[in-house]
Length: 322
Image 1: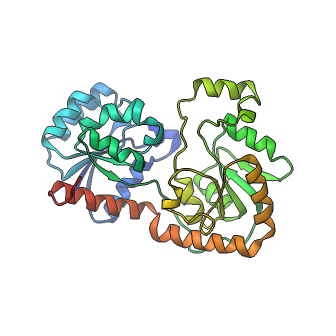
Image 2 (image 1 turned 90 degrees about the horizontal axis):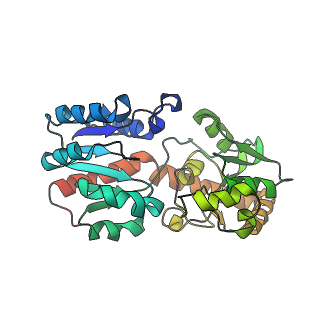
Image 3 (image 1 turned 90 degrees about the vertical axis):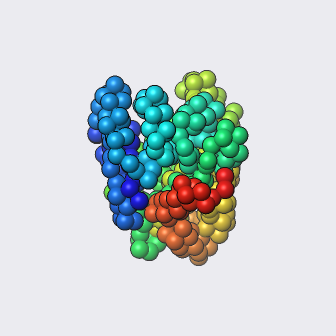
């Protein structure tokens, strides 16, 4: 297919963040044998983007792919595109952004990709053709890790909830990797006995809320009030790490709980399972191997993209029901 992409080139539109996930999607499109033509939204202001979209529309594509984040796409020019082209938008945060973001932009596209199965009906009620996909992992290890450098680790940014977890896990010798590079992340995951996957949504545990002034402020200000499946759920097993994750609705659709991933729901169950899996190597290793195998055969981004390209192609040619 001939695929047009109107996306950011760099992470969150900032060059210092390195190449964006959207850019890496285009590399997978090419690897699958498709022609790809890109218009970078972070290479110009909104007025310039509008002008470039008019020029971009002079070519005919099988579809044009977007991964909108805020209001970076000028709506009048988007509507012109959607009149003559098959426009597709990936919305990856619908568990908490559907009502305040996605539903207002969805009608401007011909086709929606959502990572939230509970939003499928909501999109259909808007008259949208919609496909369910999911976050995944770009990279994978050839085999699970066996050489340990860290007992327990967590890689990710800080929030009031994550700081509260760190405070409550004093004495467990946990390595918190914040602001690490991709290569450092891969090394930490593959050399940790236990990899924690901690929520970055708002915690409703009153002990966390009242543990600090920052916790109270986060309750008042935080827009992300619902948990979602994240890329890290698939990156940890794909990179050969054992995953102990906070439970999120729908995770069982992708990984078997207790067989391919361990989950916790409270700080008490988190502590219990850390103690358990640090001392039960055979059971931990069995989950690690099974999770790794599932991730590298089903949950890499190339699997996601191959599947949604097939569904989009079927939708374009009228061979797929909504």
